[in-house]
Image (cartoon, rainbow, N blue to C red; front, side, top):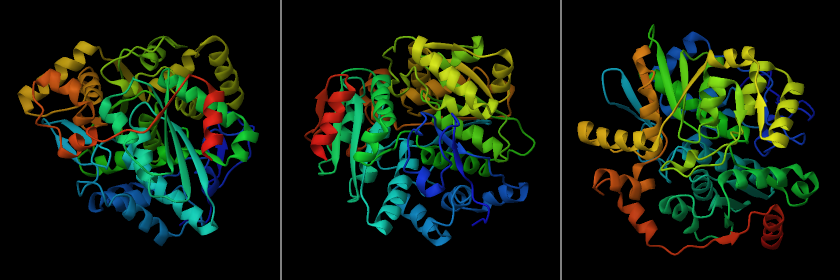
Amino acid sequence: MRNNYLKYISTRGHSQKLDFKDVIFEGLAPDGGLYIPEEWPKFTNKEIKSFSCKSYQEIAFDVISKFTDDSLSSEDLKNIIDLSYKDFDHSEITPLNKISENEYILELFHGPTYAFKDVAMQFISNLMDFYLSKSNQTINILGATSGDTGAAAIVGFQNIKSAQIFILHPYDKISDVQRKFMTTVQTNNVHNIAIKGSFDDCQNIIKEIFSDQNYKKQYNLTAINSINWSRIMCQIVYYFYTLSRIEAEGKKTIFTVPTGNFGDILAGYIAIQMGSSIDMLNIATNENDILTRTLSTGKHTLNDVKATSSPSIDIQISSNFERLLYDITKDSSFIIKTMDELKSSGSYSLESKVVNNIKEYFCSYSVSQDEVRETIINLYKTKNLVIDPHTAVGVAAAGQFSKNYDISIVLSTAHPAKFKDTVREFIQSESFVPAKINKILSLNEDMVILENSTEKVKELIMEKI
């Protein structure tokens, strides 16, 4: 552990700095911003080269310990990491699947809910429980999900007696498997709330509740969405892990990430700031292409959300994009002005200088539903490989840029069985569905359906607490 511990600041510049222990329990800062380290810690080339001889858990320790402080000993951090990944079904935790000479798929779905959110959520639940148990405290966790965060959080926290968890999801807009991973967990501390609206509506409710500081404090609320810094921190690990498993020295490398809320790909950007040799990050979007449009035009304009076969990225409000804009500009007044414009008019414009700075690290491509279908069918026929629609968004987007790079890596964010009806229709087979999924689909559900109303959600929380 280091002596000069990092502090965490708000992107909007009007909230006090936080220590590590405090920031992991925070969602939005009181000024409405997102917390980010005051500076990026760095790895030496020697440290990065040593990762090739280390396990995923050892690399996780090296990365995460850069962000912690003396509230967490090295021994306790190692124990939490080991506990968090003991139930993953692959010894490598996030194994690499080589599909051609220079193309790889990084499988992030080997956790208990078959989605990449498990990588962070298993760790966060154990980390929060560590601190809460030491201080004999309890918390109430509030989150919104576009399909996978909620399941990972619920499974992570279902046996954590120090926490109650409230998860909002868009009613009838996620897959049956995604929903049932959440709604079939029958423990007293889990509360599933289906909102008659989109994921962005759910996310806005969360933001409104957390902006009410009195309510937040009265009911001891904390967040587990990717607005919570610790989610991003955990995801940085697998970028370093990936390059440690490939002969990448002297080669140009591109990572393609299917993303809606921008957290998963932001972790790759942070890995670059810490010393990783990633050359480019490809933002793969579906027909909800706000990030692709922003990079191509400099104009960030909200449209209506379109329902697609990749529902977890059916998002228009990419919360973590604010973190990138702050790090590119280092200007809190610019962030406040820009986010106020987005809230009042549904749009903002970026100067060409800012866009060009972003393009040093990011490219983007929007994938149609037809391309998703063709990609899934083609990989199944040519490689006997079954992927989910979100991974297909990534593979199709990677194809637009990979010829310019020596190594192309696509992040596979979910097991195809999470979207079994869609994938089965495309490949005319159900052989990829594990018994665990079929069992979950047969279980009874427990959820509350509410109108798209912040007050209704507040009332339910007060009733349950």
